[in-house]
Image (cartoon, rainbow, N blue to C red; front, side):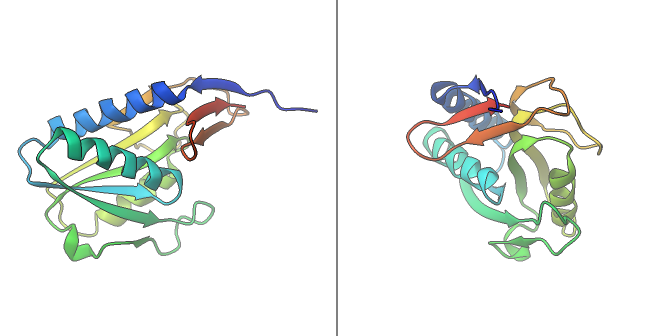
Length: 167
């Protein structure tokens, strides 16, 4: 049996969403000299890099990229970041992931950053699924989808054509 794929976002639409999220981050941090873009490893980090590229073009804010490594199957395990805690203390941080599904990954990512004092903390996702089991929300989102629990969102951000599919 083949799985049907429905394209939710095309390459052009994804680039538009990334640009809009970058502008929202700029607007929310216009009074800051620096913002930490913390992308959850894999697609969240790729998305953070793409947002950083746009943010660097549209704003004078120094954006610092941070990779957040979370075991998505066992989120209670130690979370690692590519920058030290000292590098994000009293800074504005945006935690970025590709899809907000149940909220598990995002809420444990948020918990990690709350171990130190921060100036501001926001979250950004490309796709918000509206199936949260934790009280976490995306401050900046590309698209919100009302899907069934049996459906799966697949985000492709590498190669020449970015796409978001619903399977």
